[in-house]
Length: 172
Length: 212
Image (tube, rainbow over all chains, first blue to last red; front, side, top):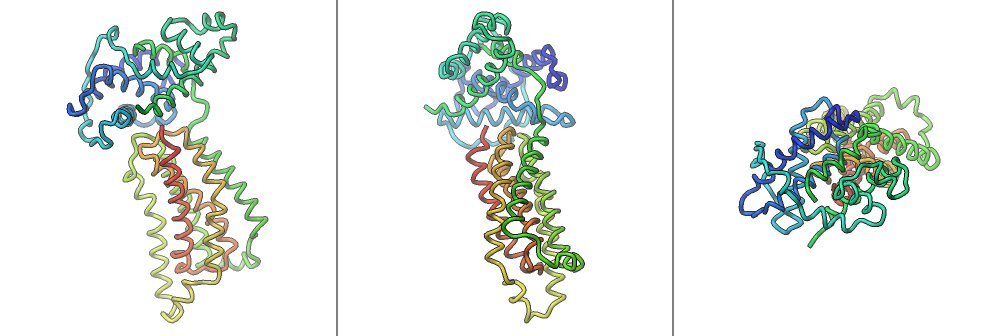
């Protein structure tokens, strides 16, 4: 994370990949009475990753990383349950341990994020779709949309913020 | 969307965060202090006998207490903006100011005869105190809340309350240099009431706008 905060993309990718199964395990440990489906779990994982990304400056480098991640995940889990009308309160003590649960990444797909991307407008959606769904690089997207690479990055950053906002306000 | 795809998007957006949370909150506090300071200078101004006042323990305590509470609120504000910090982790910092005040109140009760207690408590300008401190707090509070939107508080209301406490203490420190009521008894009632009001406002606002 420290390296990632200094702009080391490779370290950041590695961190996010390694943390995803941890988050998945965390979401699975929600009491079974909430009946979280595989999609629910993946939604929570993705929301947590997005929140971690947008709030990464709230981690203080001298502090341990795991409690911070756990708190992020807890917040997003509660958020998700609240949104889907499955209760407001969740005792945090039940989540004091982290268990790793792995799902082969190829079948793990979430629904909420797609709905939220659908709510993005114009450029923001173009950029997110091109990169996430079509797997293009920033340069390719820039050429396609006739923007500079820097502008694509700015649009992308704004899109991520709108995405997070859309996920939050998405009440059925 | 697959999680791995999302990760690729996030990696592409990775860059060094431009400002730390502390920098943002500091910027907001300085801006708020500047605006509140200007408003204070225009509307109220420092009392004429400030030099002499600083030599009395009551005035010196009143002013120092506001500064100490401000420092504690600043720390609480930064801590509560992080997701893993709970209110009880900073409770000691927040309780420090009121504890000091309680000691000063005891000293005052010993120092002056009971007949003067009501008079000292009511003071001369309780209404001004109740009005000036919240009004001076508005701009600092708004600036702090905006800065805290970059945070990720575990309980948004508590981070908002800390921002309110900081803004309230900042205004209290300014107003203290105008107000001629120096008795700890007065401070414990009217200053405390005004700052509590700002803190509650901060908590309510934080609950609404500091969600993430």
